[in-house]
Image (tube, rainbow over all chains, first blue to last red; front, side, top):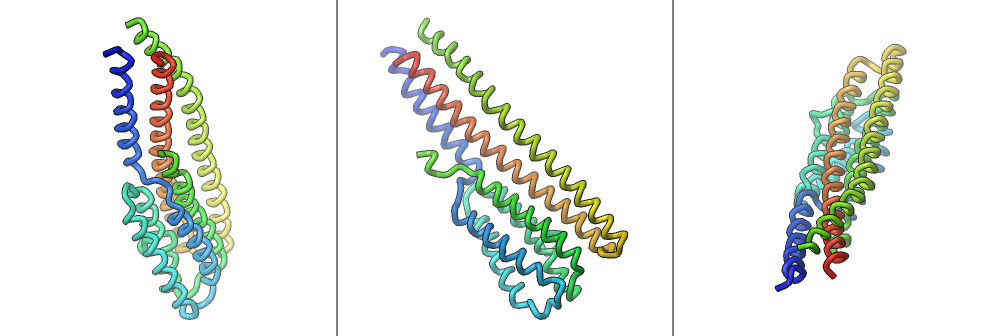
Amino acid sequence: MTTKTKLLPVLSALTLSLTLWFCSSISVFSPEAYKQAVDLKVESLDLMSFATMPYADYEEEVIYLNTELDKAFEFSKGRPDNEISTEQWEILINEEGNLLGGFLKRWETEGSLSEMFVTEMQILISDAFDTIIGLESGKIDPSEFK
Amino acid sequence: MSTFNEFVSTLKNDLLDFAKENLEEYKDEILKDGILFIEKAKSDLERWTEGLASGALSKADFEFLLKGKKDLAQMEALKQLGLSKIRITKITNGIIDVVVGSAVKTFL
């Protein structure tokens, strides 16, 4: 057997095993996850703009948004090799934290929030969603591996 | 054996070119993201302290925003971690292409 014929199967096996190993380290791009994050960013920022008004008037909308956020978190958690994105969602929606989950909880507790606080929190939440969207859009499209 | 040495030499050069092209680009990108985050944090802090002084923000608001910025920094760090993993995957795929390309150039 010549060097050439010996080397090619080895290279093919190396290519395949390295590709499979590295591909498994982080999830591939999901159009559904991307759309979910973009939609929830728009809906969240929109609802937040009403937080200067009484919480009681928007309770139903907040409950609905929280359910949608929980769905996005669970969807992220269910995807293989998606721990990093899931951790991002966890920080964003944590009621004990200081981003969206904490903001909605504070609105509920205090009844209404000051205008500047709401505006500044909208900037933070927008950036927070962008970290999720930015990571998802940076992921490799599965078609690139074909 | 001489063909194999030729392959190793071609591979070394091809990998060097690949590393020069890719690593420089990624280094600049990471640095740019980091500087942007620090600059934004500085301007946020300026506005928030002004808001606190004018009474537009309460002490609790100010504290909440600061902690929010810390949570955001964590999310940004996670994004960078994820993107680094993606870059490693892309670089690995690139290296595989270079190895296969060098082998094909030399042996076929």
